[in-house]
Image (cartoon, rainbow, N blue to C red):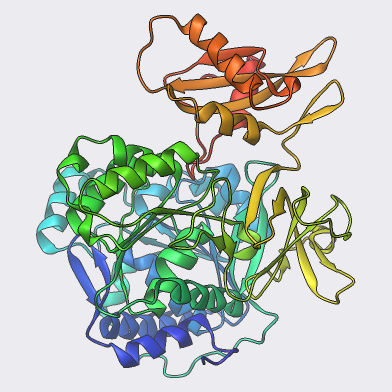
Length: 549
């Protein structure tokens, strides 16, 4: 049993002590052992202290999945600082918000990205900006190729407030030998949530939250140190990437294959090249995997687990993936879960050998689910729909600088426990399986009836000729709102008009009449957010003439 009050880096030190020579990181073939990684972490911790970073200080990490972001995360954790991890493609406006919200005085980012938000940093109270490069930890030959293809194009920035990461290696200070010990109510990481539904909110996550998730994941997969690897393509500013693909794997003695570009091509190429024992992605990744000509020649016997999150996973996609892998020598099934940043990431997962259609699985060890009447703490009977509430060791400390919003979502129920009100709708069955049915905020009101877009999308996606769909509400003079569906087809059809009518009839056979789309528009592809989720807000703006896709 691990110490409850250990920090993230203290938990990592246990792995280092047990497996010092195993590879911890793999960056385009350049492997970094646990021993070497930890030695670098300790020396960087001294550098941060010398720069004036103290316990509780916030530091923005605006980096893709490269070794430097891992080193920065754990070295800051070692001295008690809080890593605020944000999207590496953040705009100047977004960066200005992150700096103000976290009150960070230090930013660590890429030289090739700094120009995107340079103005925001210079106009803020940031004291030092540390610039690094994607090529710093590449093997020598790849580093040289990168320089000739891209490196010479990167601008060179100068100023007293700028420090280049590579200068740290010229004279490394002695390593930090003591850990800063967090109290249980101090944050270790800030991730941002809510970007697609309103103003982003900083989610305060503790060492205990992150370590508890690692224990939950390890209990699910029972890893064998030195034999396991994961394709770490999900960005670390997202709880799925940070909590599962990085921290849990390192705590379990696995190898993280870092992929800095979050794209379908990189996902496919990474699976083919590295043959990881575990993969994690969003639905668009798996759709690409089963559709690619490249993967049709691959034998998937190396794969021990495949996990999908970040968005509602269509059942037909799960079926196609399972059939594809099993017809190519593999044995795994795609496992869906449910989660949110306020719980780091996943708080439920489908069991390995038991699948229930429409469910997002059972709670991870230590977690509990409760379904209540929306905007209350009153529990509803089994099988009845209501708001999903979560209790467990991964539930956040709260929102950064938002005590009122924190108080609205972290509520003490009659059982004396603190429950997270998720704002999501769902139900539990007699066996404790959770069913996610929609977002409370994403509802279309048609003649007073509540229509849940995710339910309509699930039905449309099950049509054999549909690859993907997204549903929005559009104004109607008589019913206030009506349903419009945007559909991507698997292949060309003779008559889209006839197919549109067929899809409407198909929905009518499954749902109430208010859920049937009155309009269907066919697109070549659907807009997605930076995390690969359906971007329905862009379609709403498109409908209003305020966007182009």
